[in-house]
Every structure is written in C-alpha cells, then in structure tokens.
Image 1 (tube, protein in one colour):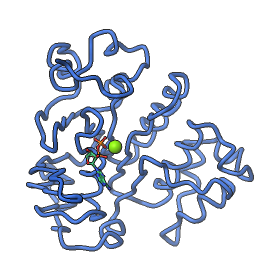
Image 2: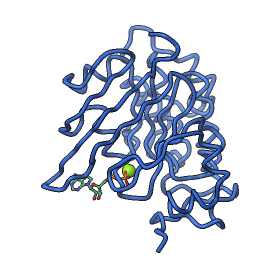
Image 3: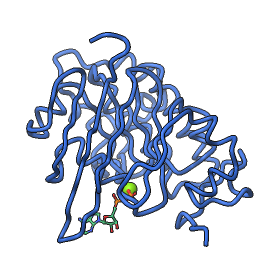
Image 4: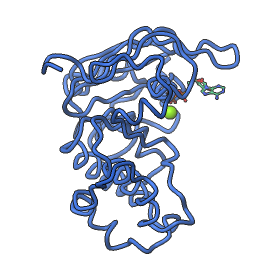
Length: 252
Ligand SMILES: Nc1ncnc2c1ncn2[C@@H]1O[C@H](COP(=O)(O)OP(=O)(O)O)[C@@H](O)[C@H]1O
Ligand SMILES: [Mg+2]
C-alpha cells in the first residue's frame, strides 16, 4: 500500500433497517495515520456507519480496508484483518476482572501486554478488580486496552465519552490520544474539545449522508459552520470539556 492510499475507504454505503433508509450513500476515506473523527448529531447514522464498515448490518456499497475489498467478507474476517472495535457499550464483561477481560481479547500468540500496561498503568494496578467496579473512564481505558492488545491496523472507537462527566472526559481523551500514537483511529465523537485535541480529519454525517469532510481544526475554528453542521451553539463549542448537548441540539 502506498502512503497516498487511504487505509479505509467507504463508498456509497446504504443501510435499511426495518424499512427505514438509515444510510443513504455514505462515502468517505481515512488516511493511514492519525485520528479521523466521525461526527454528527444524535441519530444521524454514525454507529450504523461503523457497523456497516464491520459488516455487522446488511449494507450495499463498497468497503476497502488496507488495499483489500472487504465488502463481502464476514465480520470475523474483517476484524481479523486488523480492526479493533470499541463499541458504544464498550463490550466489557462487568463480572470479570480487568485481567480476565484483557485475556479474553487476545487474538494473537503474542498479546502486547507491555504496551497496554505502559499506556494504561491503571489496568496493571487494577488487574484483579472486577471490571464492573471501574469508573467510566477506566472502563473506557480497558476497552481501548483490549483492542491495543492485538496488533491492529485500525481502531474504531464509538463515542467513548458518552455519558461521562467532564473530568472523566479528560481521562478518556488521554487514553484516545495515547492509543492514536500507536494506531490510526476512527473516532465517533460529539465532544468537540476531544475532537479538537486528537483529530486531524473530520467527517460529518447528517441524515445518513456525509455532509462535510476536511481538517478537524479548520472546521472547529469556524463556529458558524460548526453550528450549521452539528447544531451546536457557540457556548458549548469552547474547550471546557462539555459535550455538544445531550441531544445534539438542532438549529431551527
Ligand atoms: N436496530 C435498529 N432498529 C431500528 N432503528 C435503528 C436501529 N439502529 C439504528 N436505528 C436508527 O437509525 C438511525 C441512526 O442510528 P445510529 O447510527 O445509532 O445514530 P448515531 O450513532 O449517529 O446516533 C436512528 O434514527 C436510529 O433510530
Ligand atoms: Mg451512535
């Protein structure tokens, strides 16, 4: 794969769920480095896009990952080509310990415990603690740690800050930033301060379509454009760690 080729390319993805046309031709590509933020108000199709990439929902269109057309591949093949996925619900087993959660994520003969424990020392310190007793931020670290255990080429992280307090959001931002130094990340996120901190590129969805792609910083520096695309008022676009409004406010 040449440097100029995208790591991931989605072309004209359509998804229908129970008769509703949820994705209406989503197309975007992401480079093989840095963080690409997938943004948009609640319910616009961000999670469905991620599931479509992974083959978790029936879709039409085309998905190319690392130079290979994976459109017709089953999810387990797609994932085993090197995609780590941290779903919105984090996918952690609450009753199992931190160590057990990590062990269950091992997919290769040489899981990268050194790397994971270096990035997230708390996971080593809390190895024997049940995952359900971790804070929201620590659970997110565990979820990200699980996918870093394997030598993935891409990490997809779906709204890691959803429902977390601003103080914890900063912890999660640190975790995402650390992960992004190791592997390119497709980050579904509505927290603008987190996007500002980690993302190079931004892809914005609305009503099942991509309505904007470009530099994340350029977008975030344009308050009018942010309001137009994300329906967020200026007061919540500052860097105070607040999210873009629980329901992704719409402009009239
Ligand atoms: N399993 C499902 N059944 C019915 N509707 C769904 C399902 N999954 C998603 N949707 C609908 O698809 C739209 C996009 O959802 P989603 O991709 O989860 O949005 P986002 O992640 O951007 O908040 C929403 O209107 C949602 O209600
Ligand atoms: Mg979602």
